[in-house]
Length: 136
Image 1 (cartoon, rainbow, N blue to C red):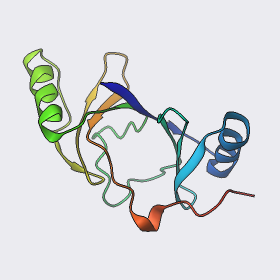
Image 2: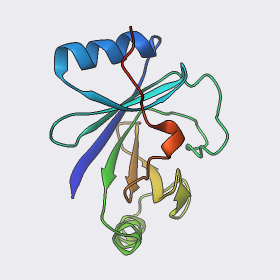
Image 3: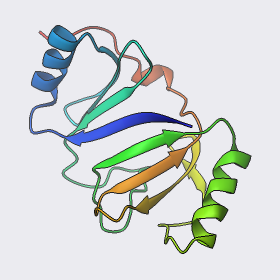
Image 4: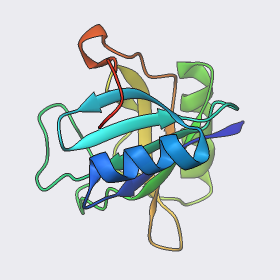
C-alpha cells in the first residue's frame, strides 16, 4: 500500500497552485474553477487544494463534512473490500461500506486523531477536467 494523496483546504486555490508549481515542481492535473486543483509530484503523490464552501453534486464526504483527509490507493475493489472488512473486524467505524465515489471504489473512516482516511481504487480523470495551462 502507498500513500496516494493529501487534501488541504485553501482560501486561495490559484495562489496555492502557483506556489506548488513554481517552488515545489508539482504539475496540475485537474482544475475545477475556483474550488479545487489537483496536482501531482514526480513520485505520483497527489496534492489537492480545495475551497469547498458547500457540498458539490457527486461528492459524498463523511456526514460531518470534514474534508481534510489522507488517502490510500489500492489496486482493486477486492483489495478495498478486504481492508474494509479488516477494519470493521477490528472495531473501526466507517462512513459507509465501500461504494463508487468520483468513479472509484472507496470508503472513509475517521482516524483517532479526528481527521478522515480515504481508501480507494485509482480515480479516473474526466477529459473535461484535464488542466489546460498554468495560472497567471
